[in-house]
Length: 305
Length: 124
Image (cartoon, chains in turn brown, cyan):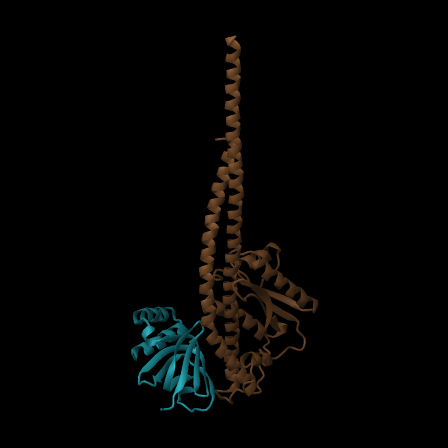
């Protein structure tokens, strides 16, 4: 076997192995997307009921709460960025990070100080490499976030927003995550979690202009709101974590699918080249044999005379 | 047909139980409250404690609920809890171990959680 042919064969073997791996990763990601989507669906009843309850208190009473009142001048904002622990997901993480950076830039232009909180090793690595300060970060659960994880993330954020701005608290809380629109579309977006605008929540809860009943609050509207709002934030963060996880798996699936397709194409091109090399080798061998035989024939014909 | 209320017991990550019931007893921060069909709209904060649901076919469902809310309007009752477990989902032996550990470590919150679970499990 010729040297060139051997090189082609070796490359085909290695690309075939790569293709097998990416194919397997694609299938794993596909099954995980379905699981993650199911988790998103399972968390919606709680989120829906909670939103209804928040709206009910917000519209049924005139209570003022630090989590729903807009500060007159916003001096400090918290940005929570959700990324994944692992890469191999196309532009998933860089899109989320880019979105967070745009938001940070916008807030800083408005004269605010931005405090960054990060979920996911990719985001942490990005910020550490650029030596930017991160207030707090969490890693290790982005593939399958649980409600306990969401609580862990929400706790310092709620604490920061309840603190007075002069003592290092924040006035606003923004979240940047990747929304799972469909299997093919996931968009990075930013959203203001706090302070909560009750009008918007009300629109979300009852889009058809449904009138909420006049509730009797137990023990009192203030206490109910006090207990509700942190839970509401936790549930929003939980939902964002779940969507982010589903999006990450979908992005991985797509990236691995195109990697598999590319490997397939590469194998095809390489086999063509290998075939051509083999043909050339055979042609050369034949012409060498024919050449040799005719030279031999010429030589014997000459010696006969 | 007797009046019924539709109950949904929802935990943060799943719907634990839903169905028709005639009476729901839950513990709010200001004491136990019983809700029957036709009750006035209510929104309350729950303490961790057992929730008893008397279903319309005469059965009883007991669940251990750790913090959350009760909301009732239009004969629809939702119990929102971060963690909620039906009494027959509770593994008594495991909870007893947890209770011992919580007592040893002096973790009052964990001790209370285990206690609520045990009490819910004892009713089945």
